[in-house]
Amino acid sequence: MPDGDAGVGIVQDAGTQPLLELGTGTQSFAALTDGQTVTIIAGPQGGFHVWAAARTRAPLDPMLLKLTVKVKLAGAELSSTDYKVNLVKNGAYSEWYAMTALVDDPAQVRGKSTVIELIATDSAGRTATDSRTVIPAGP
Image 1 (cartoon, rainbow, N blue to C red):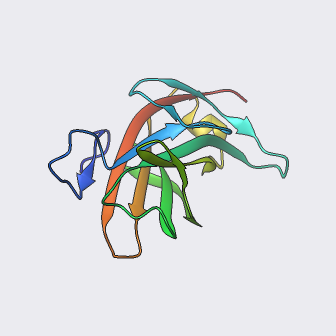
Image 2 (image 1 turned 120 degrees about the vertical axis):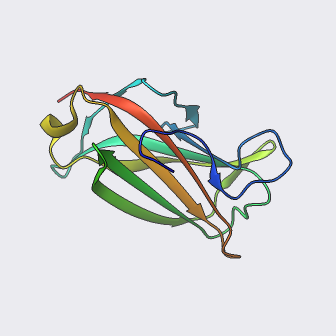
């Protein structure tokens, strides 16, 4: 999928809801929209990040799911962080939040259209992707 295009990729079924949705949040899932301003957080160990969250549904298996969060600017990958987690059930979905989309140099992305991409791969090898173009703001 080209940079800047949001939406589900690779795995699809007859359902009307996405298999994977990129969001934000530290204590619960909150949907992200393209063009939304997101806050750059100064981490306690000196790094910077934007909060990311994931929401999935069947047929993706939420147990031992590998989630990869990437930050891209003008097509160049700035960071990639992997998580192996068991998602938490929330109604028809499973969710995980408080993931960090790393931003090494806030000045590099501040005020610029920046793509955050989420890739999920379950233990059966099923994969889905979602991305949003956001505008980081903050320190």
